[in-house]
Image (cartoon, rainbow, N blue to C red):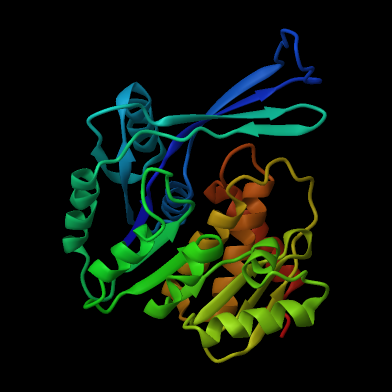
Length: 310
């Protein structure tokens, strides 16, 4: 079983307008609502790929009710803890001539409520996969991911981490199967600019020395790079279509990689499916659908008949 953890899920409220002017009443052209959260995104794309997972996390208040209902409509198997106080957050995404975001903090999570999440992890058994994705709510300590992984330390599981800075590096001692920094996040970790491909590869190998088995790097418009457990470097370029949305592309990359590796045991196939899922999400208003993923996979197989570039 694959378990994803989203500590601070949200409703993403997307408003579209010709332009946004400060200090006046602005009128929208359209509005959209999506259930958001990095772990949730991974679970949704896994579901589209026909792979079962369970999403853990916290919800609160009337917005928490909406999140749970949204997950049911999405076909995501969710087992969320309902908090006693507060409301799950609403994040506002303003899409005009420029894009702006207002991300809220979310509800308080008490120590006994966090302990309930740790207790849920008792169902995880050898061979399962746990996905830790996204930032930690300000009400929880920076050691939250470490506490989760420490609870699982005696189990032979695959660990996947998609987080930034110290949240990511603190997890490396648990030897995660997969980590997914992007180019900017590598710069933040190593406090240096990634000027070329050699800089990226060098930093990826440093992360492997610290414990990561596979380092999957999102390069934005330049595609994806993987340094696998055998220290082999793989490249995959994006397909060229009009980009509609970039939110959730990185989570889609993680979901596709996990699904591809589980079904084939091949890093080449995992990278191809992961890149296809990331691309498919960028071509959709929301997260990638199975139909769009299949279309992109077919196109990528034509571009890469021999597999990713090595």
